[in-house]
Length: 356
Image (tube, rainbow, N blue to C red; front, top):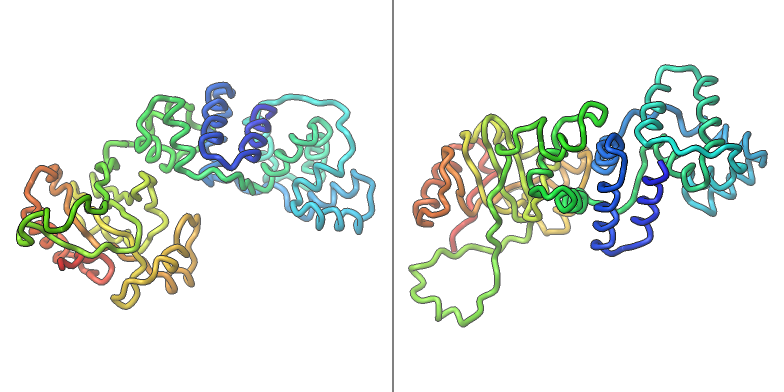
């Protein structure tokens, strides 16, 4: 628990990405092997069921602190975070211990189904064995409400650096279905529980400004020109009965865009589409600010689906029937892409990027 507390403090002390990655690399190098999968689970939103209600935690903290309710409320208003407020108002611990993080998490999970008196006895004993910073972390474990500024991409980069493993392989592995109690850190990083080969995207080929005058490119007829759409470059991968959506940052975003999940049934296995993730409503591409309403969300509600619907404008076909097409002429790839898109039933969602 102490080493994880130190990690959280280090992450909160800096806004620099490199500093945070360095702190994560150090943690995953030094931490207990059984703790590591639980930390990855927390950082990727795999939160366990809350074992104790916020109301009860607050009530017990007021009782143990010996301060009146109004003073606790004022303290909470000043601090702005309930977990931190509780950690600050509690009396000093009688006996400090250094139990492993996974032990605390498993003990908290075991409280589900127990009566309130049993829960209270456990929580009060825990508070009495942790220092102020550890109590703060412990309270966050109860609520599952960690906000520490670590994106999935940052976590994956740190894990890749620490383990010398390809980042896209780790991304697919940690986004898969797994439980921290059932898998080792080594197996999680290696993707032993999933077939990472199914998901791998191709390297992204992004658009860059011309280095010379347009006339230096030669005849216009030798080129294909398209609009530069204001969205997020993405690849849609369908292999062996599984669908994966990748952003240009090599981040797996499949669950963020349910409008595109129909492609699991309509694309052939061994298909990789290159294109732009956009907000498209009634056939019209929306401003990037509309698309932003859908980014980096764990859950999507009906209002967001209606206000900022997602579409995918395809630029290229990188793989078809399991064959890498990148060495094929663009004209050949475009003809096959038109064939693939024409076979889809929802062309208002996934469409060809028009040629100018």
